Image (tube, rainbow, N blue to C red; front, side, top):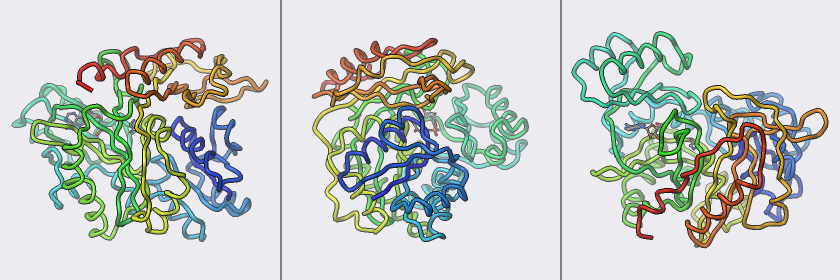
Length: 426
Ligand code: AMP
Ligand code: GLY
């Protein structure tokens, strides 16, 4: 079969790589893709938001299955656009992708269906938000309702910071219309866990857990990023926690969406916080995580095409989703200055060091070919250096070893990805 993947990041590289392992697939296209994805797929220069262009391409090439990696097109209704033309596509429709597209929607859903999450209030008026903050407890979390490249959350220590956040979001519109509505939320403390799942509208199957490292600098300092590294499994995600989440969070979310006439098919990514009062949902995403996909998919035993098809057909209950009893870690090599200001266009050296190695991967995020066919940096996050190991310690040792194999000007990384491994008795 022929498969089209929509997106251009490290997540889409991992998805394309996993699809390439399926013996059902004869050809993979990726729109728009990047210089690493080009190793496993034919990249086509159509933007992820160009729904007409993508639909036309899928028809022309007789694509059997399209897989959407990114949040923007999903929230914008790309799945509906494909389905209207009778094309097979993996991902939630617009009315279900709202689970990620609107924090006010997802918070209201959780409240209505008793899914554990932080207490909150929603505001569409800056004065009312500020009046509420006068009597609020600090610290407090203030969030843009809509998509904001993962940067729409302000954690405010005091009233002054909180008022500034309200001004930035609602008056200065730093994320445009995404800040027309804001959510003000109780501050939670605890370990964070990323749990990805496949969903077919009724059934949910959980993938192995992961841990993101969102801040830019060592010691979880600096600004929030899309993620600077990841480990899987998450050492804090115990069997007891899994049982609790299975009981109160995962199926409850799928059932709630169904009850709202918004059946969810695709990937739900649960951002959880393990608080003193049990696991709570920080946020939902309607797609694989980036870089969670880079550490979870290499551990997945199933043919991913079977799982995608089962989600579309509503037969996920027939799939025995399995993961290797091993571990995986990735370290993101970024352009110095990310996520604020950085230069790009520098040649990337060392890709060949990963050739022929089954337990090391170089997933490309922001790379492209320059005019001469050289691979150059083309984004804040450049590559995710990824390694499998028997356990987390070995995966970490190998991933950091492999970070030395790749060179480019302004290479920047965190040196403490997976430090939580040392804090638990494994
Ligand atoms: P989100 O985009 O909602 O996942 O938020 C980004 C990050 O902000 C999360 O990964 C948390 O580290 C932090 N965060 C979000 N909401 C809260 C909250 N209510 N309390 C504490 N930290 C939060
Ligand atoms: N790594 C977090 C995300 O994909 O949203």
